[in-house]
Image (tube, rainbow, N blue to C red):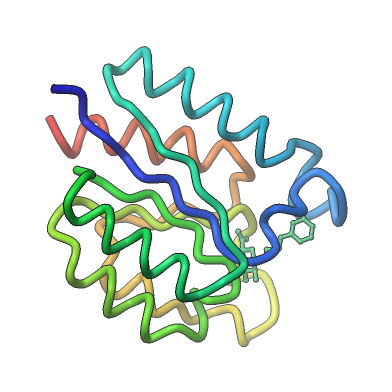
Length: 145
Ligand code: CA2
């Protein structure tokens, strides 16, 4: 059976490629989904790429992943820094979790330096742009071997 990985993106990441390219680059969320789907296919994975601006929706998908997925790659956006609810939901997930940030959150404002999600992630990749998601998928492949 093919391993299913959820790739979850949080608030404002639907704007990728439309604003602030100096921080977030020129690629869109659709480009990202296409790259991840292709990369996953060559490793024998299936990916489900989802984005929401709503905290509750992200939590519902994490609960859904408990039944369906072997791993979660998540960029919780600004909820990384605020959401104990997303942290609690991820703690109830038994598979592997990799947190991705497009920017290096430690090089930015101090309110971005702490992430609740990092407390339950197996690994954190940041500052490498959208390449971070590709590296997360490769790492997931190795972690789930
Ligand atoms: O670096 C990251 O990936 C972040 O998770 C992005 C979040 C930010 O709040 C985190 O501190 C770090 C913001 C996402 C906003 O995405 C945009 C993309 C394009 C244009 C405008 C916003």
